[in-house]
Length: 142
Image (tube, rainbow, N blue to C red; front, side, top):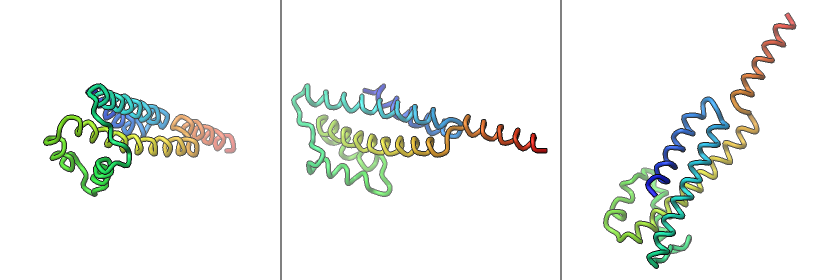
């Protein structure tokens, strides 16, 4: 579980760093992050299932409360600290599931936007090739 969580975070960071040089790599890394978070989601669900604890439904009052917390302007770990540090493990696992769903939703939107941007603008290699061809064409006209 720890490795999946760390991998998700790291691949998001690495994807953002790669954005300046390779949209293709950024898309790949964000997809890897998404897959890691999906693995983490399955781990939390398995944890609850094997211990015969309920998994909150998407629109349960508990899940809606966690989602509402995520809409605060200054959301951070502090937003959730009280709940994470004082609730039983099954509640904490359900909170984590809610947060993973939120992160996955945002990553899905980011991936879609990156793919659209790549289709419209292309990657750096494509832009560099076009610039080189344009320069050659300009030189041939002189």
